[in-house]
Image (cartoon, rainbow over all chains, first blue to last red; front, side, top):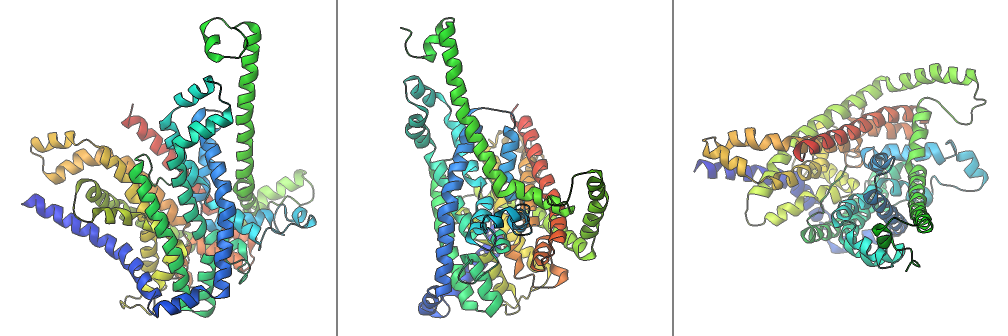
Length: 273
Length: 307
């Protein structure tokens, strides 16, 4: 009797906390975005600047996600295969971007690559503009979304072990063929999990991009920056909420993919430094 | 039968010298791939954030590559005047109050979510009820949701036009709600797998010896949960102290609710790069201490748990 009441009170506290902290804001987002009807939502989302922002976000993701995936898988292969001098330092280095404020990442890129930065004079002499341009946005996004593929693939890779790879090599398969036919199929769910996390993080990055982008409407606004600007400059509630809803829907789809992958592969979890 | 460089055959007997040399060549070739790949990765990390972060620290101490000369005068200036400008920038009243606000907010948020994280993980692991999968999926939502989305929603829900008539605009409570929201997954997910891996035998023993539910929890479950709880605390704290997007709107524009990240952002808007670099360096050191401490801590406890 006493046991049941304790169980129930804990249940109520937990669900109440989650409902107030998470459920209320997320529910409010959906209600508010549609409060002026589906038509208003649609006309907000199809405004030229909103479309340009969505396009830029997609382009940034199309560059940052593949590069970070290749680097992440490569690093995972390297770290799983052998312990070498500096392997612990490399693991730690991958965690730096998520442990550090995104604002600092943005400031760092400016102090290295803008006109006032270390390489600024050299870059401008060669006609390369990194700041206030899509290049800087891509770099900032790459930095903050770096660790997720590595963190998802490495535990799977360690669990799979090396037996099958060694067998393939003994039977005469080259390194490349072994990777495509043995290693990659074994870690595919881990890769997909990491890539999904990377996409979610890429599309949502705000702070680092805000610092480097210069916030030029229609040119260097990704979707998160657009949402911020729409509110900050014109107090356009519906516009901000419509943009927020688009981003939120993408992340909810990502979330569904992640949890179904987790159900498939128990080794996967949101493990974030 | 000595034609192919077959590693298994060379394991059987003493390798003849030619074959041994060939194996050495093969190993060199295979590890040269690893070395090449490794340098590529390190190069990539260097370009996208390692060198830039070094530039932040250098600028924080007014240390610029294109100053004239590398002589003794240069070093002397940077070790004295450089440090003193850094110190002046970091100890400005506005900077101190921003860092202090970030510190105490992050500590309290990490502490509250550490407690709630254990409770939520407990319910998710030990309890069963209809719709539990939904609650389970809910936990990661704050992680997946872009921070600016959180910022916009919280601004309208708890801003001056609040439909609930709860106005937290430009208050520390508004910041706290945002930080509790974004750090929630870290606190829960750090504890949940560890709680799930406890087999319950010790708990059953404690209960059969007459310990109540609460006492069993405190003296049997909690000791094995501590490292995970502290790990989650570290993650949540690190996330909270660097957070910007979700709190930037509800914080408004007043000094009382300016966190360290917002303070740095404001400095960049005024093109005060040296100031921004100095405060960034201070915050960077804090974040790295947390990162390294939680890594070391986690490793030490892993040893203890699985000898």
